Image (cartoon, rainbow, N blue to C red; front, side):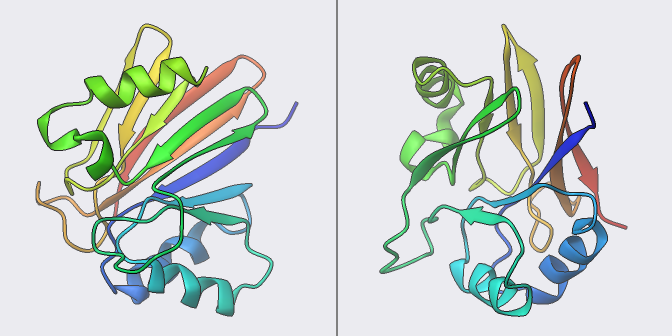
Length: 162
């Protein structure tokens, strides 16, 4: 089996230039892009520019009036991914609520944004990742995330923009 890839982006906050740069870098080798909210307008612009781009998104706390789901689940090969912006999962206080929701839904990956701080760890069969923010990081490191899926398992990691 070939390796499959999910690119995870969050909190672009109208920095379309940087979002486009990430999409351009990965659109040939990526099966799915996930945008974790803030700001949906960026996703609409990317869809207009690349109508066949496989991209899904959820609403963030700055996506006022959005009809998008706050939480969604997607499957690709052996990855079952719960993705959300995080504000409805109280991630500012920790990831316990998010982890429990992901486990209850039978997921092996839980993704969140909102804090603008990159984070990735593996705990008891569950990857928990925040890709950070490529445009307004609060940890000083512009970033996004990647999930590689191969026959022998998953690997989730954060990529720093240069």
